[in-house]
Image 1 (spheres, one colour):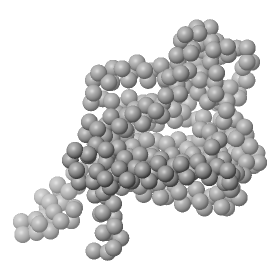
Image 2 (cartoon, rainbow, N blue to C red):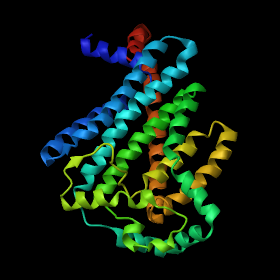
Image 3 (spheres, rainbow, N blue to C red):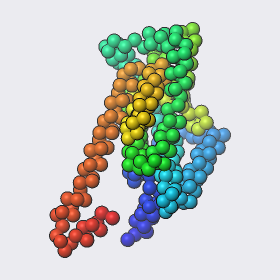
Image 4 (tube, helix red, strand yellow):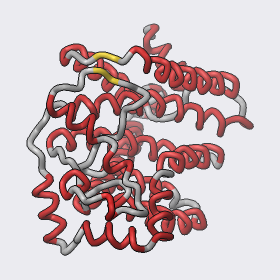
Length: 335
């Protein structure tokens, strides 16, 4: 067996989460970021390197937790959580860079089509904005909830790891990275400014909702499309994907991951339902963004389950087909 295979097996036994495919994708995205950035003339703001160092420090801490808890039954949850975080930290950074690079492709904006889709469904975005701003408690509540999506994801990683729901944890991570990459790809092909950029509501229409997420990305986004953005500032980079809404996709996948815990699912449906509504106002998304984001993650979950079942059937078929004298060899082939 080669040294590469030995190393791969050691890593797989030491870092059990997430799937091998996830780690391979992280490597590919990182290489794409480096090559695309170099060819596109992108650099890094020197003062923002410290933020990358914080990410590296957090990753080193996770690796320390993994090595400390490796092989201990009582620390399986810690190892599973730290393994997941060890992947999620660099992957999230790499995909933020990729989303900026994708925006620089500068395809024609599709805001007209997205607004027309909303109108065809009878949805009036301006009227919804007025509603949440004339109902102060409701508007304040949904705006606050909107900003808890990623903290909720981090808590779900903890919950699934420490309740030993390892298959659900791996599923959540696989759906997370695959849906996020699909979202970035679609955002490059179908770019949009979003309702705040398209309708340009006056500030006096928003006494309650402070649409930070729906507007703060616009300077970077417009600069990328104009070809005047050339330096990544890791302390200031924003989520710039409008269509489809990854926030909506994230809400759906998190709610799905709660399905084994009925009480948590009941609370999650209510809480995440309000967050989904806030995606339209606080997040500055068209209804079309939310619908397509939700459908996209549903398709990803379905595809992932189908692939998992198919892979699970392959070893059993191979073992059944093997002659009795070769059964041991057949089993070894799937170690």
